[in-house]
Image (cartoon, rainbow, N blue to C red; front, top):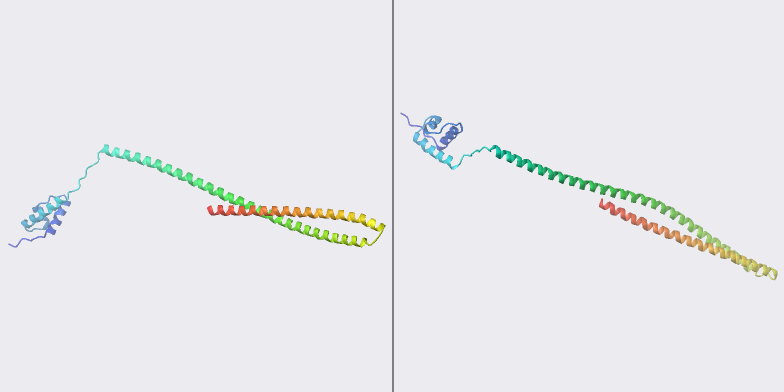
Length: 226
């Protein structure tokens, strides 16, 4: 009679796990059959070790959830989901409102910038026209002063020349001198009027330049915010 085959603990554990997984009872006899023979003493010793290992690791217990508990859980979950949906809707609506308000403010800022830019262009055109008019007025005033000085010099020379005549000529010259002086007085008034007009035009141009500078600063400020 030959010796009975000896199996290692790993072999016995593997066979026992296989039997347990297939739903069969794990005994020394079923183990020996699964192993194809062997020493019952060795198999029994390894089986005790396998059983001790199985006891050390408790098998998971599956307890079915009662219908009442499941229904209550589902109702609580649905209520929580509903409340969460309401909160999300409120948050989403608030965010949409804030986004729309931000878009409106942005559009208003862009419109304001466009309006300021249009006003700036119009003011620039007016300033250019005013500066052109101012240059013309200055030229007219300068020419008027030159003409007045020329006429005054000519009249003064005429007065000096006429002073050399005597008698009736002197009387006539006196009358002429008075007329000339009156004419010179009118010329001086015209020069003063032109000078005042030139000063007002210069002041208006300076005020318009200040307005344009303020609008440009406002546009830069609005552009930086955008």
